[in-house]
Length: 369
Image (cartoon, rainbow, N blue to C red; front, side):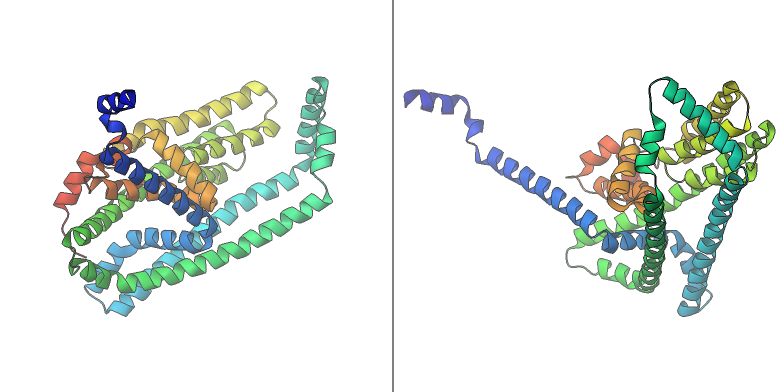
């Protein structure tokens, strides 16, 4: 008994109610995070359209606000929605054009791809890898039928997704000013100002992020097009647009944008040296634009550690698929912006973001909508 008392006296923090309270609070936070992630994954059909609608509202609200100064509110809303729909239809048409052209070229040149496949198969079987048996086991008529059904289901779900997003955007643009007034009139002024300033700062950052990302995507697409044209790679314009499109997904997008033309070059050029040169030059373009030009254009306002960006892409892709891959980094920007505005969570922004810039932006932002 005496030894136990001596141990307790020597280590008072073991029985301290403060330490126990902190441990209990940390456990509650961890449990809440796990439940939130499970809810986001399970109810992705509910949360993903909302997140995407908020993202779009942040982008088109300046247009809506400018139109409302000279036009009636409903007419300004109709014009904003029309611009959004036209932009999405044009973007979707270009996507269908680029990938459709690549698909038709593969079908028309199927003999060369078949010969290339046979060469690879012979080389692998010569090294003890039986490709034919693996192909016959995993790729059959039933597999093709399942793939067609999967693609059809994805197209239907995509159309439903965008219809829901359009409804949310419509309602959000109608209520954004009322929501701002409600935040200003909250009894808890601290929470109201935090939500209002955080929303304004987040929207500004997302617009800047998309502006920089679009500019870098255009530069990447032009460089890929020029390079493909210079080396004689067919479908140079299509490869340039595909590089432009996939550059909106950090890390994963540029990698896929370099692999596709490289696989295509394997059937067009007779030497492995040329194929390796194509792969190396495409990666060099991606590296220069993504690692050298973009950080200098973006500045420090969007500074997020590369590990955070990579984790965001994989994490939100796991939760919401392709839409999560596109919107993962903007969501992370929003979370870090709100974390930087409150002392209890500012340490997260200090680790993964640039809280000094965030604080100055929040303090200097005007509370206007």
